[in-house]
Image (cartoon, rainbow, N blue to C red; front, side, top):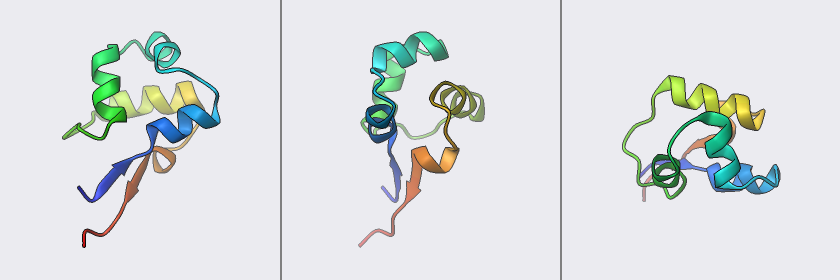
Length: 69
């Protein structure tokens, strides 16, 4: 996939666990895990906004475009 999710990187930079983020954002661990592993096909802006608020980051910190080879 050309869109890469860097949620694990941002979590590590913030020294925050997925469990902590789940509590702050109010999204299930399962859904955040799918997003973190890059298996998600879509993300709601509402969800992206909540994650950015909790992690004090920008959407571009979480999502990256890479050209496919």
